[in-house]
Image (cartoon, rainbow, N blue to C red; front, side, top):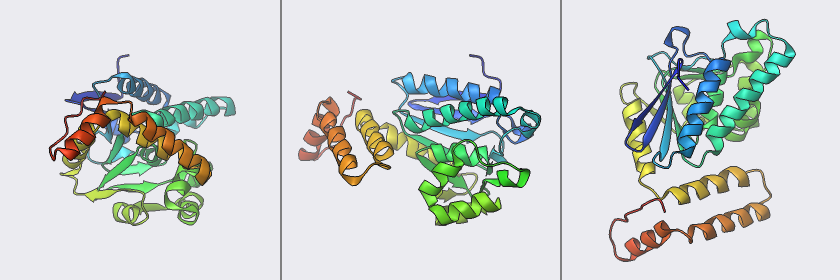
Length: 260
């Protein structure tokens, strides 16, 4: 697929998807979502990609929301199709077997917050702004915001943001656990890439199992989630990386993981 609204770049084992519509603050529409889904599919299936970064072009926005001009006169059937595409795309980010990091470099409103929520880790620049302001235009979040946000920050804060259309700055997002780290704008991508490279150097199958255990165990009973965890760690013992990691630990040296 030829991309018109995103950039897919590679730097060693790190792939970066850049939302590339700066003139409209990287607003999302069905075409952009389709390109993102395609790029995520490529990254998920490429064994040489070990970690993924998502960020926005320009210095004003990560994603300022959905493209309201496209949505305004849509029918219920058309909107449902758009919401389904958004959910499929974000779920692909969330469940892909590799870690994803959102480098939030400005406004992350509506769909922008929802995309960030689907990532495993969120780093934000000091000028980042988060919010689910859909209520202010007569609708509600439609790409998982009503579900992922309360799971991450708690019901009370999530309802404040969703019901009130409240926007918060990067520091407040850090305080409530919405983002992992706040960085200066000029250091955001550099520090994100540094962390991504750290993840890329770790055993890929163990990363996949850790992500599966957290994602799929979260809504289970503790007993069932514990069984899931035990199954995931047992599978790690079928890998060369597990043997290398433990051997290196006992030999007091740095392990040489090969992703096998």
